[in-house]
Amino acid sequence: MSDMLIEKLRKNRDLTDDELRSLIDSCEHDEALRKAADEVRRERYGDAVYLRGLIEFTSYCKNNCLYCGLRASNAKAQRYRLSREEILACCAEGYELGFRTFVLQGGEDPYYTDDIICDIISAIRREYLDCAITLSIGEKPRGSYRRYFEAGANRYLLRHETADPAHYAKLHPDNMSADNRRRCLFDLKEIGYQVGSGFMVGSPYQTTDNLIADLRFLQELQPDMIGIGPYITHRDTPFRDEKSGSVELTLRMLSILRLMFPYALLPSTTALGTIHPSGRELGLKSGANVVMPNLSPTAVREKYSIYDNKICTGEESARCRDCLELRIKAAGYHRTRRCEKITVHSK
Image 1 (tube, rainbow, N blue to C red):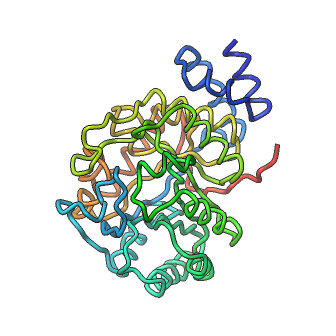
Image 2: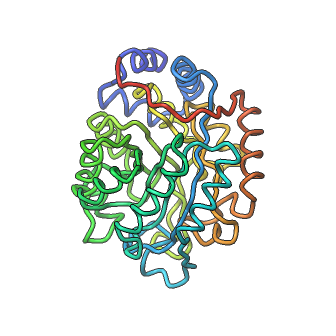
């Protein structure tokens, strides 16, 4: 029965809620699901894996999300901000190492005004015309998103985290809402960004129905990139005693996403590598085709502590890249130096 469902999902890119529930809740079909996802991934992208250079440029955040180690009320968090010159130095090193996508990620830090962000984007764009500039800096007014786009940013990552408003309210403070997160994502699409969304797997209070709602929301949004990873606890948050998500369920959801969204860029995340020694390789074998080595200065990497025991905080950028290339090769794929191109959303 599960093989029939997998083939139906592969062909139609959709299932009923009950059919999705039967796939999500059972481990019996994991191997067949992984095999189908890998076949679809190879049909669209071959064995290429795209590397993005991640620059975590600020650990300050005004928000108090209950699951995140960077939450504003965490007095134990180590805070830092990278200057424009430090960010450009990370880009220069990354370009020399062969990266053609830079991802500027940080907490929602009011210090970085729109003027500062636009100045940084413009400086990167002037220097690296052949590179994609991706932002991951949270919820902003539509006008801010427009300014960043006009300055030269062309991609934006903003996980919706959970599509169910009641579940969202259990994970976030009262001043944040699922409706506003949704507004941001559709604003970004309308402006012209290549948009990435996604969700945590195994977050506190999450149910199978929540995961199905996430899939339905993504069907509505039709993002270019979908980032999911296992929820991992942080010792200095209100959820310190909650269980982390499982690698098995995360891989299962990755495979389902690949079958539902064959065109999408799917990262095999650092969080996967954190909860399993071969997590990133397993992610690639389950349908993922992107990895994101860290270009941030080694002196600050441990300070960007969104969850406990994050890996790859002490490696130099070149070593981190080389390690990932070896892992990619061992998993049966190859690193491509081409900038990721988004496949048109067509059946």
